[in-house]
Length: 141
Ligand SMILES: [Zn+2]
Image (cartoon, rainbow, N blue to C red; front, side):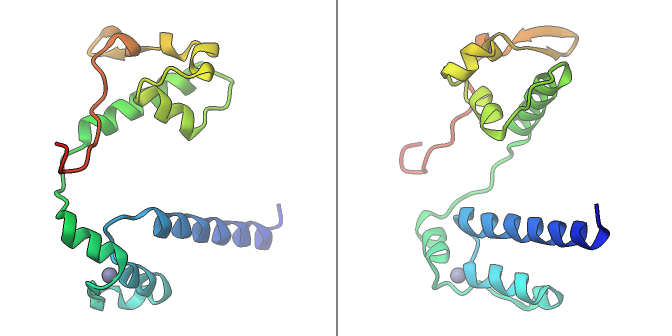
């Protein structure tokens, strides 16, 4: 591939990731996000505006950081198990379906629900294990 073309595609891919992150973030200040994107060399000088929808949401819901390392490790185990011997393409949706133990047609058709993980020298059937941790709003918890 032409190096100029490849560099252009990488820049566009990075921009797409940034746009997706901007859309998906729930608590990060949008003004701060845009300033960091446009002028990253000044990123330490931007403050939260306390006026955008995300700042208002953050102030209303007062979210707390939690340690999600066990969930992240489980997700990585699933990715490793799905991609280890498979020639099939695995999508992010497949991984999320597996992590949340969804019982979709695709999961059953591909027999992902029979996936076995190697954990501490033991074989564990993912779908027979305890259900995954589910994130719920603070009011319900
Ligand atoms: Zn803001």
